[in-house]
Structures are given as C-alpha cells and as structure tokens.
Image 1 (cartoon, rainbow, N blue to C red):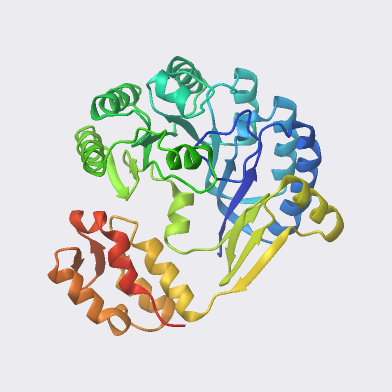
Image 2: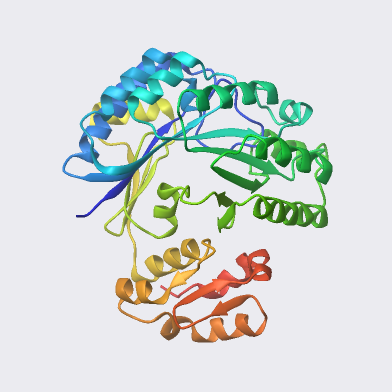
Length: 376
C-alpha cells in the first residue's frame, strides 16, 4: 500500500526568535480562526484518497493555539486515513504550553512531541528571543511525561551568541538528566534579514569562532554517544527505535503532502510550494481552493541530486540498490570520478552496498556534495 507523510504548518508565534527565518508571525492572532478554516479546506482536498504513516505539525508555534483552536485543528484531521502504526508529531514551545492544551494534543492522537529548548542558560535564551526559562521548559517536560507522552524530542542550537563550551556542556547535562527519547542539535546559521543578520552586520553578535564551534560539535557527538544516543543523521540523535520517521521520509526522498503557509510538498516527482503570508494563504484558499504559488516537475537530474543531497545526511548513507531501483542506473555510472576522488581524500566510504561520509567527510559535506551536481 502506498503511504504518504503529511506536514501541517501553523505560522503563529507569541514572539519571533531573533535567528528565525521560517514563515512565522507574531501579532497576527486575529487571523487564527480564518487560517484554521482555510487549512481545513486544504487538508480535506489534499488528503482525500491517501493513506498516511507520518504526520508532523510544525511552525511557527503550534502550541501558540488555544485549547479551543487546537480542537478546531483536530476536527480537520479526523477524516485522514492513517496506518495503524503511524507517527504523529507536533512541535511545542515552553512558555505557552498548558496542561489543558496538552490534554487536547493527546486527544488529537499526537504520539510524538518536539520541544524547542535551544539552551538551558536563561541569559542566552533571553538574548536569542525565546519566551521561556529553563525552569519553565523543565516543568513542561515533566508534565508531559506524567501525562504519558513517551516519545519526546528536545531541540538544541549551539554556536549561539556568548555561548562557550562550558555553557553547552551544562545544556547537554541538563537535557540528558531528563532522558528525552530524541535530541536534535543544530548549529546556529545567520539567515538573511533576521534580527541576528542585522546585528551580525553591525558586529553586535559575539559568536564562537569556527574552531570553538567544531569543538562544540565534537562535544555533542561524544557526550550523546556516551549516553546511548545513536547519531542517525547529521544533526539528530535517538535512543533505540525513536528516530523521527517523518524526517527520515524527507531524507529518503519519499512522498509527502504539505498544507499551510509556505508548506512544501513532494508527490510523484512534483514539487509544490504554498504562499508564505497568512493573509495571502487565506485569500487564495477561499478564492481558488489552492495556495500553491510554485509547481515544478523535477527533471531526472534534479531528482537524482535531491535524492543524493538528502540521503547523504543519513549516517548510513545511500543504498546503492535503492538508488538503482529508483533511477534505473547505478550510482557509480553517474558519479564514479567524484566518488573515487573523495574516497582518496578520506571523506567518503564506498562499499558494495552503500556510499556514506566518513566523520571527516561530514565536516566537508557541502564541498563533497558540490561534486555531485549533474548538468540538466
């Protein structure tokens, strides 16, 4: 049976973090119910006749919604056909998650939560625009555990302004003491036109240097390994059996449907992207029944490149058999010269079954993958 993933975007935030360039907006609460009505229309249209084994509600801040609004969202999902063993994830932020909301989320069928912490240092949290303290995060986390949520991810960002290895080490210790099932660790990226972008241009951000950031990454890898977390993707670590199945779907190039502002989808080789603004999304759904502003049928070269670039993020690398079954050519027939070059440089491991990065290769992944571009 053919199955799909479903991504649903909730673009509302109480306050936008200073590093964030996602389609998320504060001060737009008056649009929530209109947005949820439009979202219900798109979900009904796009999910009809499909079966889903993963659902992911992201943002923005889905937990920004009130309990009543979460119930409205839940109604939109009732008709979706799910596999018996489906994974249903939802992002939550400390600072606006209450017990009442958590009960509604559980009633929705959510069985995996992803909580944005970023750091356990309250001074850093304030400086990056977070609306919570570590104490509030911990209270929320323990509440969710008591309510029976048994699959929880915690997000950490490292390389933050004024952060050093000692502060990061304390964050890791604080998080590990709670024993989450999954930990995502991302290095800070200064995205264009965010508040951090302008502060960085004005030399107002005190960021760790490149060597310190590398040492931070090494600290994360070794610490999480020592505590039993498997690094299954460049930035993601899980206890046994707790890998994020929805994200794996992206990395393995499998089909997923996207609903909401700025949502992307990939179905049968066609990519689609929705309008980014809340007002534009509501207007387009009401008038046209779709919010798509870009539709693109991938060429063979684009499909191969995306498959390679995403699949190589996985620590297990690319399966040569899966590649050949999908594209009807061998990986070697397209990339023999590039593979040999980076194997010699100690950046790739090439076996009869798989192609994957070495530990050193992960550090230079962008450089390596630039040699895996195909001419259209």
